[in-house]
Image 1 (tube, rainbow, N blue to C red):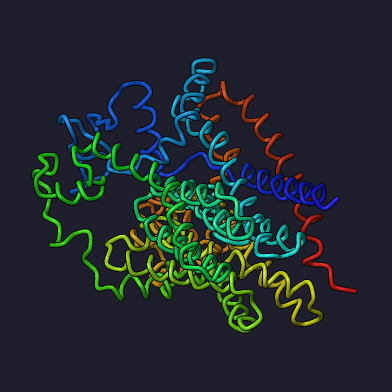
Image 2: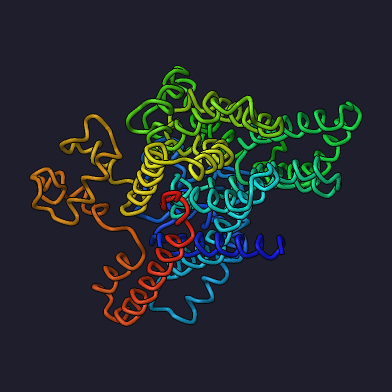
Length: 530
């Protein structure tokens, strides 16, 4: 019976995540992911990764679109290969779909295919992995299920389900790394610890700074095993087995970089930095500051990610502060395994803050929130938010309503994040639009959405600004969800009009089912205890 209810819970939260991931799908996957898709396409078609058209000119030294000079004189896009490897099957399917239905552009088909066949299932898997980890921490099934579903909707996980940069794939793999490490400690099955290492090896293929996740997962494994067994030899054996799982994919990443750059220890960003002054592609462009891209004082990146109105992790994930406070209050009552995880999570966040603190783009450029740090926030929130949900289910009156209000606010913030292109508010700052000086982008986003609904509410609405400003904003002053953008495309391509109408019907059904299923499942959070 317990197994049946667990399966039902898993299917329910997977359905909710799947429906919402479809509902918030955009017509774009972001420039970085576009380039990684370009890499994947080049591999199986035998074409060049770097495609330079006559109308393209470098804007700055290191312009990522132009790649770097690699082995054999070929140019390569200076990114890790892991995400491109994930996208390969979807890219192939999208190419075949274009051959069957050529009215839709090949790149658009490929983008849709990788979104629906690769990224959406991975987002669903991340939610299920969260549920498994919470069950291993002995949270009851209801709390684990409610936490996993709500975490998807009430944190920046939702935004990065729409814009599939590395974040949610790393969230899946690192969560699995922690979960399988803990499963090994519980069940003594060696394949669990091997899988933990394998998951982190895959994370390293996707992003080289996953070495920070490697450190904290190993710290967690060693702490739990030493506490459980009280035996240094058994702890060393667990770590050895972990590395047996980790090394194959870690070595593969080195082999692939050797094949691309001619150096076993090279990585794309290292080569890019080395070639900023030597690559003929950058001739005539202004020199960059010494030590570029590590040009900031560490306080810039650390304080910016924590407290700046444009990028603060506490603003974009407003549940973080109350969850941290609750974690401190309940600390003495927590199981040692959960304490080890939270310590590892805080260290993980601290390491990411330090690593990116001097980086010129510590903020993630036009990304929503501090994208280099949000995965650490998500990992930290998994058990903390479960404690929050657990407390909510047993709270009454004012406390319960305050906690419900925080969840509702968090969900509202995440829904605004997927409503419009993420570049809108940064572009407003760049062109000096009214209200952008303080760079409080969440506030700007709320105003921008209100202006889309009724542009007459203020003369500061983007469409009401002088042409020299509004023309720069026009591309981003739109609803970014797929049926809206596809309908705009159909206005210029009448042959797509029937497809646009079908898309609206399907999307409407998906949204309706998503809302109903979510309300029904999350009802225990919002219905007062009798």
